[in-house]
Amino acid sequence: MLMTTNEPVGAGALAEGEAAALYRLMTWLSPAFPVGGFSYSSGLEWAVEAGDITDAASLADWLDAMLGDGSGFCDATFLVHAHRATEAGETAALNEIAGLASAFVPSRERQLETTSQGRAFIDIARSAWNADGLDAMIAACSTPLVYPVAVGVVAAMHTVPLAPTLHAFLHALVSNWISAASRLIPLGQTDSQRVLARLEAAVAATADRALDAALDDLGSATFRADLASLRHETQYTRLFRS
Image (cartoon, rainbow, N blue to C red; front, side, top):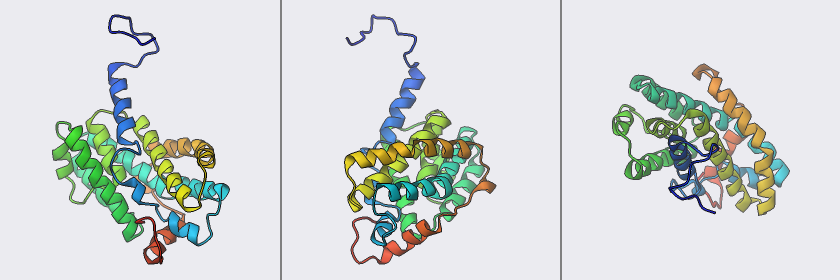
């Protein structure tokens, strides 16, 4: 039976602030939030064409590496530092983080992907979920905000806690990768969910590392994935923009 406004709130119910934070995270990082994530594959399209990814097992291995040793960890770390700088009102630090995050993108197509999504995320959040001071915080950055930095800034301005923001972001990132791969390999819905389930521990481990990481800890060892994002540009036929 549905709870009415006259009934007491149970001990397990979410507090008002927690409910608002959860609602916003579920909205912002949902596949339905219109940042255009479905248009990008982060180089997976070339990896499938090259034969590096052929089935659910090889996809899971590739994404596990991207998550823990590549762009997943780097994006998570940038989100953490952007959130903390925004929360502290440190505009100069945020500007440096935004510039470094942009410089870390390994290819032109990945740059298009992450800056386009970052811009769309900011524009839509500002239109529908604006927060006092958000415009000034964005204006303090001299470079376009890449997607993880944009998420960190908006979440902090809405006082959404860092840890759940980070976990939700990584889940959305992995889900988008799997969605792209499911159209390329192709992969059935059940196998797609099996890959997502297999990566649950990797998402948690990456989030834990990122929460403790300094900017000096940033680095990537997924050279094949970086090459995939570079070579995607010259593929003869393409479904995705990266």
